Image 1 (cartoon, one colour):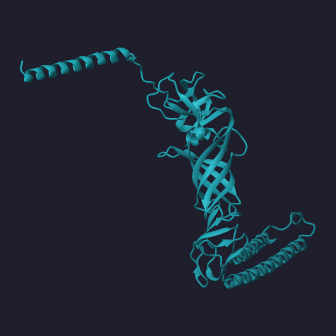
Image 2 (cartoon, helix red, strand yellow; image 1 turned 180 degrees about the horizontal axis):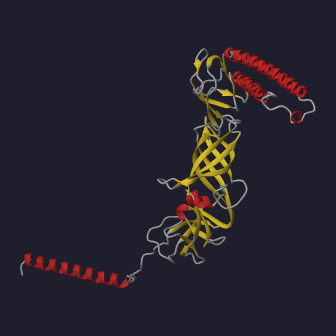
Image 3 (tube, helix red, strand yellow; image 1 turned 30 degrees about the horizontal axis):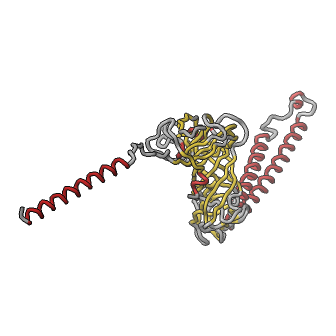
Length: 396
């Protein structure tokens, strides 16, 4: 065998030994390796936020919104004509006045002359009556002289002979003259126009020197002693509070807290429900409730006319109620509670009242229960959950 052939055989043997050694080593490694067991992946229960249920008596606060309107509002209209010789400085839009203040004076000269003429006519009527009375007395005396001791004379003179029609006419003229004098004095008094209440002007259309006619509207006045707020309410909300003349019961209406932000300040006033307008709006299905507020202009800034406000009406007190976030009330008036085993349970509840952010539950929840306020996907009754109180979760 040549040297080339021997080298090839030697190389083949070396490769065969290496392959055999590798195979033997692999089998030993396989024999020494532990068998892997199949395991299911661990799935954690979802983490939810919970709140403790507290059941207690709760007063119902019915909220609404409305616009402030004047309680008293009138047009300033003179009852006599003439030239305006005085106009109050407060008679401008927004001007303030007090009850009894002189707002306007009309030139009184014509009406003073009318009083003088009426007084003269009254004196003349009084004189005429006295003269007629004397003539009537004389006529009766003459009758008795003509018929002394006669039967006809016992009857007395006839009404015409006794001048009774003349007396009646004279008395009537005196009464008419007295009435004319009172009318003249009344017209004179009406040349001075005073404020019937404390308030403000909202419109004004008169100035000094201007001729004003009887019946002409000169200004608009509204009272600041009290205001009213018109609050549209859903029909079902009126179940919770008393509206005099509209809901069952007697006595004054429910108390109201009026809130508004004006001139950069949060202000509040107290008021009372006084009545409802008595008919439902056909378009909105709402009923207008009237809230009365006294001394609306004492605070500064005041509860101004036209201001848009929020009202909280104190309603009935429910004996045992749990207040929960409205978002925690699920479809079909259902809530999610956590039982003693840490499992989610569906619970049907009875709702007394719904507000924007809260729901009043009057049946279905017990004191101390944990209720879920988180949102979950794919919820099933009895699923395992992990809980964390809402107060702690807020800090995460």
